[in-house]
Length: 201
Ligand SMILES: Cc1cc2nc3c(=O)[nH]c(=O)nc-3n(C[C@H](O)[C@H](O)[C@H](O)COP(=O)(O)O)c2cc1C
Image (cartoon, rainbow, N blue to C red; front, side):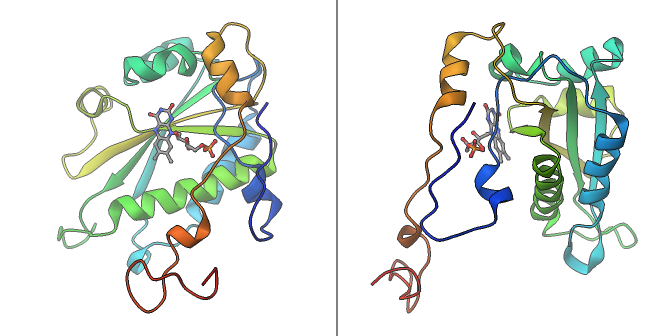
């Protein structure tokens, strides 16, 4: 189980407790919990309130649907993702719904919505491991996703656990302390790379 972070400045526990588990308990996630995750995503902010995100969801309780979704996960993520109780595909519309014009913040807004989902999950004792390594073309074909919608991320969701079915390297990574670049490497003041006095000197 991952160790909670040592933050440089105090932050909300939901943020410091969140991590991306590889190992999940062999335990379903209730429909009530899943609905709450998507409801949390629903209330995310988006440019012009466009809400460009969509999620496609498959649970291991429906083996055929789960296998279909798992086939959209790249090999590099297969060894651990195949044991997740829930797999989700995060998609985003690249154009404004009503005008068809390009929507510049489509990927940003899906990220925000997924962040809402992730923190609701954390509050409910669930873990989420996002994946950029997915087969987008395959997902588009399998789920008949419209041309202007981009399947961007996979999300593996479940209760973090010590899964003995995983290779040891994954178990070790789950136990490692999470790390981040220091805050003074990315908060600037007068110009680029000039550290803001808020966080250092
Ligand atoms: C958009 C996104 C895509 C990611 N893609 C993958 C992935 O394909 N495979 C993987 O093992 N982890 C993936 N991760 C997890 C990151 O590696 C992880 O968030 C990072 O190492 C920080 O660890 P933490 O989330 O436990 O703090 C992804 C995370 C995000 C936000």
